Image (tube, rainbow, N blue to C red; front, side, top):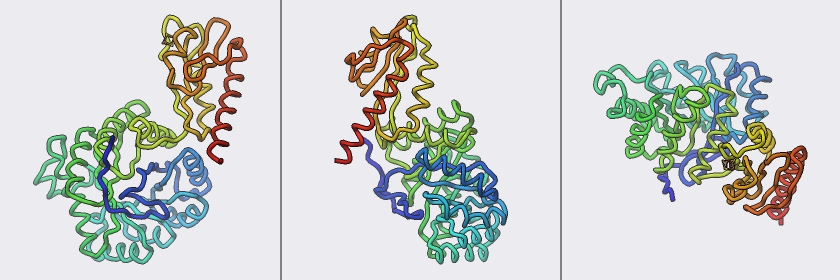
Length: 363
Ligand code: SF4
């Protein structure tokens, strides 16, 4: 049982972050933000996939100007990601960004920061103080050295210094992230930061890598932190289609029994008893269940003898044999069908089961 640290709650649009709000899943678009149609199309896919907060890069005024159009056509809160230029932050807020991610210390001085904070107050926009290993101030690097697993202090001090700049201006609608590409630095850094602040924390491993490497690094770091009750929202960063980030994020939450979304797929690794093309069958089923909403446990197993027993916890499953396959429910054989009909019959049963669950929920 995970006991979550109760942080101060902020609102990003209508989505609460921190406190007792569910841990939210976010992603970032990789389109040119100013190309509104492309950006909207990507956000729509992500939203359908479960993304709850979406961040877009705002590197220039064209991107800032696109914020209004994008915001008005999506159903999830929009966060503008800005580096260095306070005018872009102000422009994004004026155009309706629900939150901004900045480093207060790199906006070019006190006056510019003050104007940015004034805009945030006026538009009721929270700010994420987003520090990463590459953005740490020189004096902190000199004092603490580059962040390492044993000494992540430069990251923490940099974040807290940036937070104080906002607090000194009477601003507290804050969320913090300290990102490193190193797993252990991320874990130790967030642990220490969590002990020093009550603001909600955005977790992430930056530049984590491709699908496999990035998933492993993010899951280890974020899995450990979340299991310790640290973190209010997070992004799995992958050098891939951002939809994969959402899928990994929800699998991680499911593995930790924090949140569930959509069906869970259980499949065996196959072995010498497998007499069907199991990989192809798994791929087909996986593709099919991606659009499903209910939390059904679905199994795809390589043999009829051991499959149903090994996947006893599955609500419904399929197991293939030589020329014939079975559909089973909770470990018990439900139907035997010729191999050719296995997939369509199974899909039909799956659909029926989802429909039954939906009806039961509606009652
Ligand atoms: S379910 Fe059957 S095919 Fe799959 S690993 Fe177990 S014994 Fe092998």
